[in-house]
Image 1: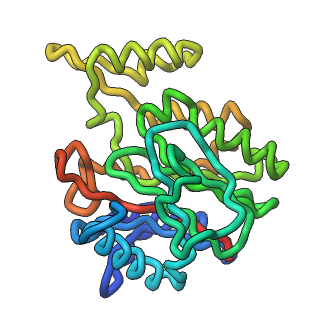
Image 2: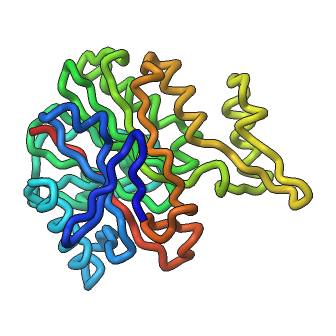
Image 3: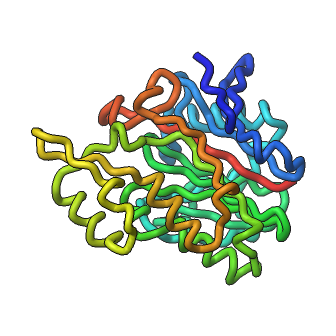
Amino acid sequence: MDLSNENVIHIKNREIEYLQFRRLLEYPEVMHAYSLGMNTNFRTAKSGNEYEKAIEDYKKLCNAIGLNYKNIVKPVQCHTNEVKIVDELFERPDIGMQRYARTDGLITNKKDMILSTTNADCILFLFYDTVKKVIANVHSGWRGTLTRISVKTIEKMKQQYNCNPEDIIVCICPSIRKCHFEVEIDVKDLFEKEFQDIKEINSIIEEKVPNKKWHIDTIEINKILMQREGIKEENIIDSKICSVCNKELVHSYRAEGKSFALNTALLTLK
């Protein structure tokens, strides 16, 4: 199976498979990758075989794109809207440290710091300001979308680095899409209340009769929110890949259940 399309390239290395965004490949100062394959798992529990497996997979992915895995910075994601600035490495690799506890986004303008996030259906955003040379790697599940972490990231890039949203590219990694993001009435009500100011909300949230459940397009919500912040429509680059539809190559909580594994997205400045 090849997941390449007009926005992404599917690369099959001897040891690992991954996606890269065609748009980001236009900028040689930025390196990135999104992992693929059921034989990988980037779950970094602090002990045991799971951690060792994740480190080995990080090494393989970093080697494939010419990076040193020891420069990885990985937050402890908790479905928050907390976005933190990364100025230095404290450990090598800097994974799961307390200073990045309950953190779902990282921003830096420092070279050679590999920002990492993980997902298994949630959205991962890769931000790059092509003028100020600032990057951000952000995890947004449905709770992160509700609390507008994509907006908070743009605001922080503006505040900390004087970024102009018109100069920012945002790439959307594989994630669950409207076709499979089915929710009960409690979650539907949360979205309707939070995004009542979005005129398209009635088409974004679609009732599935007769089972009384709803499908929500969280990708479209984030696109609207980011454009409101000044991101150009043509600078929002969507992989257009559903994690559930492509469960043979992309880890998915909905498809795998409680034993789900994790994909990673890497982003760094050279």
